[in-house]
Length: 117
Image 1 (cartoon, rainbow, N blue to C red):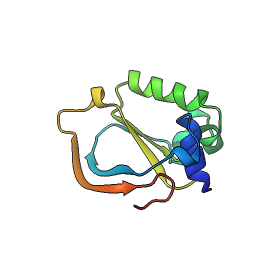
Image 2 (cartoon, rainbow, N blue to C red):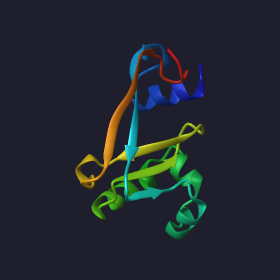
Image 3 (tube, helix red, strand yellow):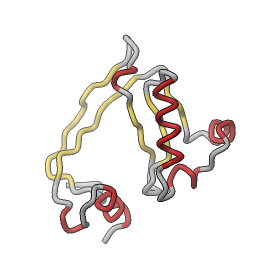
């Protein structure tokens, strides 16, 4: 099975075979306070590596997330733990008044790990 699908299933306490089709929504966002962990300078300032963020141990990403939330960041942009792309974690309760979250598209029948229906 695909590495991303296996990882997604494992983190959800499931097997790859249990991961059926889903609904995938594409959301347009405009946020003003985003901690950009895809930026090497930001990671260096925090004394973390990309491997710290994408490895199997969730302690470092969780600590960074808790701290960013406490400091009022609206979101964290980070390298995806799957090794493909990026992940945006939005703290809905920290959104600024001028933030935008808008559903742009919905795909039915999306299968996690494959990128398509």
